[in-house]
Image (cartoon, rainbow, N blue to C red):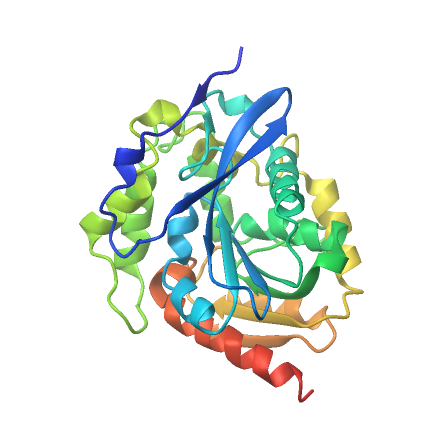
Length: 314
């Protein structure tokens, strides 16, 4: 028996710096009809930017990037994975797999018929988002890759990601999750910020805890850390990730890496190593942690727009 929970709209009222209207698509998976939320802003005169989040965030993470990208003529689509944000939440932890998240995102791309797409991905947005470019390359114009990875033979998991993985195992301190808001409070307060007004600790907690009235609704966030295929893989889609990693070595369209250098999960060394596997990829760094959209969203948008402008001259 699968139970679906829908977060009441009032929990999303008055969030700091998030004036965007909700949009919804109906996704069918495993016999379920699930409502998937996505942010949809901008004209799209210059194309579409698809922004994919990871754990424990939702489309709120991209709020600082949306206004400058919209002003530049792009349509910004930022979905919430099932189990996150304003999307429906299956309450059974073992329902969630990376394969399902990937298929749900693909269904949304097809349903909205997104084309001329720039993919922006970070954290689990990498494995779920990059697969769309592999499966539907005709829909994608370029990739923007930030502090993420694809599992593949020989990939050396950092001590930071091993620690994170261990916290969520049976007996670990995060099994009874302290809160998605707590996680983001720590990252918002503990790392340097770019220009603009950063969230306060209370604002960060409210924004990232808003989708979850209680711990029963947090099955999706609980499942992501356990999906990291460090030692074995039952739910992490490791084989698909490895195949995507190999396929993307032949990607001939523009690729731009924007990397937070103070991330101990996906390190600067890994970002530089990965960028080399793409012919002609650019790499820009920011003194930021893992969630650079949160701390440096304005700067990330500026870098991406500048790199796109340079493409015509290369």
